[in-house]
Each structure stands twice: as structure tokens, then as C-alpha cells.
Length: 340
Image 1 (tube, rainbow, N blue to C red):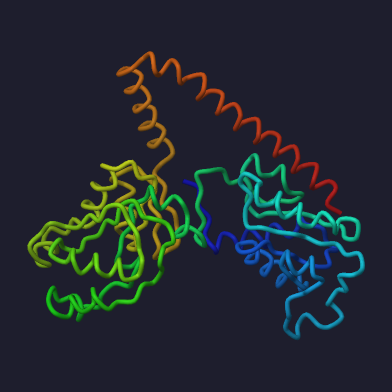
Image 2 (tube, rainbow, N blue to C red):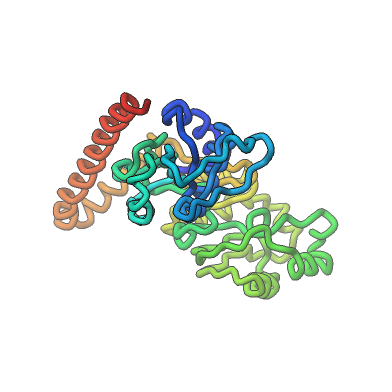
């Protein structure tokens, strides 16, 4: 699972600056994620910024005193413009933006860029920083990404805060917490599996809270133990979550606790996103490849004919990925030579 945090994005943008044209007049962000990139670039370069609609309407976003009035460009006159997004995957969004700005190309020198691209996506921009292939998620969009439908997600520490020691009394205080705690985030996609160490006896309160805030999900997996003391005595929080994760076809587990996240990844050999540290914990490459290889061999032994039919399709896909990576590398070298 490929992943980039906001900290990664910030660092990558700072390194990317050396590859961009040095004489830009304005940065234009593609709403919404592109505005995050545009804002950081504009701050680092001390340039004005706007969005795509603003460029079309000769409108520039207000800036603080550090920019200075002499830096505000007149968009009715030719300018060097960098239009940016956080990422390009299929290129559909970038094509729409280019179509919208086509009637301005006679006036401005418009460059297009994205911090992250897929091997295919680099074909739609003039500048990019890094090829990040799918499957991929970013810190700023993971809770609104389609991958949630195929993910396991913890509740406490992810969707809401953890209870305090006083609230976590396995009694009236805890029931009040479950009913009244405010959400930290409300995902806009349906979650595949909510996996929590909350006890089964609190299922109704948990379901009511989820319904109250419009959090949709397919399955809610809870610990079937009599009380908090039993749960603490067993001390198998990570093991419980790992067993659920391993039994599903989920691509990702989103966990708040760093210690549990590492243990879940170790036990399952599958990626875990830790919200406490904003890091993706991926299993070892060799271990993952070994497991994947065993699965392929096992399936081939079960149904050799089906495996034989699928083999050419698999090889074609791998060759296609390699081709795009080679094309992207050649293009980036050419872009570096012409950037100034």
C-alpha cells in the first residue's frame, strides 16, 4: 500500500521547487487538494495564488503583507502560471482543467504539475515530483477514499477520542461517554469492517452513536467478553484485531495505537495505517512476496487450467506497468533539461 502523509507532502514540495521554472508569476490550485499544494508553494516562493476559477475570472486570493502589492500580477497581461494538483492518477481531472483553461493559453504560459503521479498520470503534466502507483492513499483523503469499503477501521482514537480513565469505568460513566462523545472525523464512504475492542454488551449504544453521526459500515465486530477486567486480563487487543483483519479480504487496517498497529501488521503481514503517528506500517517486502507467491502457487494447484488462462493477462499487466515507468523516467529527464 503506497501512502504519503502531510509531512511527506510538505517535504516533497520543498524538494520539488528546484525542478520547477524559477520565474513563475502565480500558482493556481485545482480544488480541493491542489489548493493545499498551491498554498505551500505560494508561501515558499512568496508568490500570489488563486484557484482555477480565479484564473479564468482574473481573480487572485487575498494575501498577507509579506507578499506586497508589487507582487500582485495583472492577469489581463501575459504571465507564467503553474497549475497544480496533489496527484494525478487517470488524468481525468487534469484533462477537465486543461479544457477549461484552453482559451487562456494564447495569453499565459501555463504549466501543469502534480506532486504525485501514477506511471500513466505523468503524461498529463509538465512537472511532477514522484511516481506513486496504486493502490495508494494520502493522509488528507484516506477517510473519504473508496478504499474504506475494503478496510478495517478502529473506533476509539480514530472516529472519536479515547475515553479518559474516569470515563472508562465499564459502568455509567462509560455509557455516557459512548452516547455523548463527539466524532473526530466522519468518513464519507462506507466502512467495510469496524473492528473495536469495545464489548458486545455496548453494541446498541455504539450502533446508536454511529447512526447519529451518519457513519455507515457493513460489519461491526466487537469483543465478546463479559467485562473490562476480563479484557484487560487477556491483553490481546492487537491479536483480536489481527484475527479479524486476517479473516477478511480487507486491504487496509486503520488503527490509532502505535503499539497495536505494529503488532497487527506483524501478525497479519498486511498494511496498517496508524493515526497516532500518521504512518503506514507495511509488512516486509520479502515476507509479503513470499506469502503472495504461496497464494499464487496454491491457487494454481487447485485449478491449473484457470491459472494458465490468467497467466498471460498477469504478465501483460506487469509489462504495461514497466513500460509506463520507463516512459515516465525518460520524460522527466527531458523536462529537467527544458525547465528553465
